[in-house]
Length: 180
Ligand SMILES: [Zn+2]
Image (cartoon, rainbow, N blue to C red; front, side):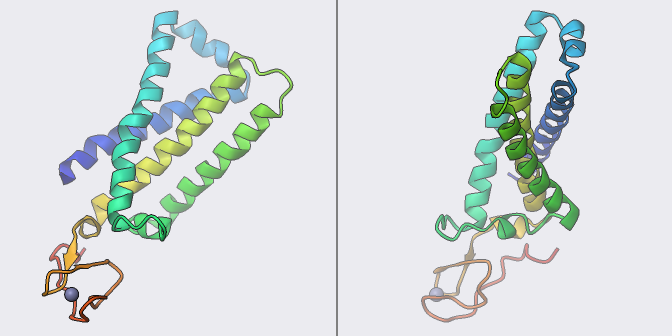
């Protein structure tokens, strides 16, 4: 399963890069540059690929994030999910996420929403999804132990933060993958 993280990282990395390029073009009013380079079919293909790619990477990203949080949706922690990322990558992902929101607000505050503004809003959100997905994949690639389920000697599931089982108090067994 871990090997699947590599193509997922590649897709989300490429998606982020492409979205960022198109977003920059739309932001600076140079979208004609792209429309002059690509014919209409290629433009459609590009937007389908960028949009579809989000689903391809986001579904496994959400599953992994839930797994790291032991399916606990009430106590969902991004800090836990991104624990395997270097600091700069975490900050970059959150910065891009913040940028997507600002970008979107800037677009909808415009009086006229033309095609260029639409592309700008779409690629801004694409950047955020791809960046978050990439960080999640990278984090679990670096810390595969986070994906393994831990058990106490009595067979109860133990969360990754706990040294002792919350049900019976026995020390949690090591998964053997925690040492990185
Ligand atoms: Zn137990």
